[in-house]
Image (cartoon, rainbow, N blue to C red; front, side, top):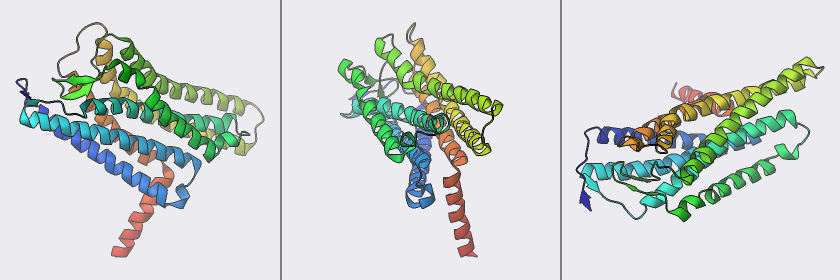
Length: 296
C-alpha cells in the first residue's frame, strides 16, 4: 500500500456525486422491475424487453457503485491500493456496458419486426425475444474475452479504478466500434428505415389499423432514439478521451471526468424510461392514487 501524493480537493465531492447517481439508478431500476413483475398488465413482450433494459441498468449501475466505493475509500485514505477484485470490476464494466447498449437495440429490432414483418408472429413471440435476450447476455461475456486474454484492464493510480488505458491498440478500437458505435448507429438506422417504410405505407392503399399500428411503433423507436441520445451525448467525453489516446496522452484524471458524464446519463435514461413506458407510469400513478385515497 502506497500513499497517494496526487490527491485533489475535488476527488471526494465527485466520488460522493457518483455514489448518489448510482444509488438513484439502482432504486429506480428495482422499482421498475418490481412493478413489471407484479403488475399483470405489464406482462407483455414489449415490457419483457423494457425489463431487460432495466435489469441491464441495474447490473451496470451496481458494478459502477461498487467501483465508486473503492475509489472513495482510496481517496479518503489517500492511498494507492488495488484490491483483489479491482480487475474483475473492470471487466464487468465492459460486459454490462455492452448489455446496456444492446438491450435498447433489441427493443428497436422488435418494433421494426412488428411493422415490417408483422406476419412473422414467431419473431414477435415472447419465446423468441427471450432467446435473443439470452443470446445478448451470453455474447456479452464472449465479446469481452479479448480484454481478458490480453490483460488490458489494469489499475490506474490517478483515476483510482481498474480500466483499460486510453492508448492506441486494437482493443481500444474494438471497444469504441463494437461496444458503443455499432449498437447506437444501428438503432438510428432502424429508426430511419422505419420512417421511410411508414411514409411508403401512407402513399399506398393501406388499412387504417395497420397504418396506425406502424405509426405507433415508429413513435416507440423514436422514444428509444431519444433515450440513447443521452448515452451518445453524455458518452462523448469518454469516447473522446479514448480516441485521444490513439494520438497523444489524455489529460490527467480523464476517467474520473468521463464517468461523471456517464453517471449523469444513467439518471436521464431512467427518467426517460419512466416518461416513455406508459404501463409502468400508469401502474405507479394508480398505486400513488390508492395511497392518497387511503390517507384521506
